[in-house]
Length: 296
Image: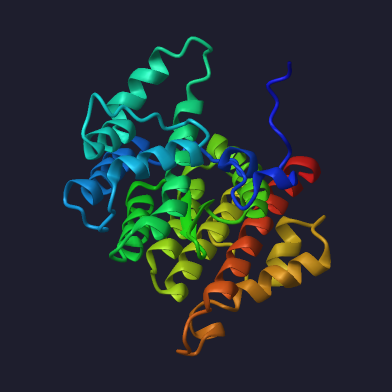
């Protein structure tokens, strides 16, 4: 009998398709040990102090086991509920399971915790008497921002999502960052920081300015011209002669968004605009890398 699970469009999943079937996570980024340490303490406190007013803690954990498809296993005879939750998410327990994994698939132990976390977010609004959900979501988002873990929480009910959208992860994180880190690690770190600053709520003018500065520094390194300015099409043509004219115009228009050239003191881009601008910056970085690689 095959162990393959049903595809995501199978209606039998109901309203909760397993998290691991929907998303991929970049595990190489962020301090996962600190993230799970913070998460373990925060979620267990809901039970230790009855913060959410859940009437029957053992029943909630039984539901959590079912909702997570067995990723979380209740142990009524061994631990109080808050100790079970604290132990399950503790980085020490995760590290031990990863080291002892007989199938040599250590990352599945992190995925199982994310599956349980998503199930937790689904069940909490149903079982809570006091509305602790906004506080929990706020803290999880702060944990991801502080530790650099590439996750976010959005929607109603809250959904755990890779940072940012799947397309962004595939096109930018999977393609651009490995290439940057191989030869331009500082630029990779700059772009990662831009997305983390977005999650933290940093001023969007600052986010864009820092991200574009990283792009310009990359262009200078690729061209070996430390004074290259991306506002000047003539310089782009000189250093990247094979670059299509439309792309050159796109780059100079992006450059014009910085400081007084574009904003004139206006408010920074909104949440959707800054995502588009960051995506554009990363795409231009990919184009410049490929242009130099294939065209010299």
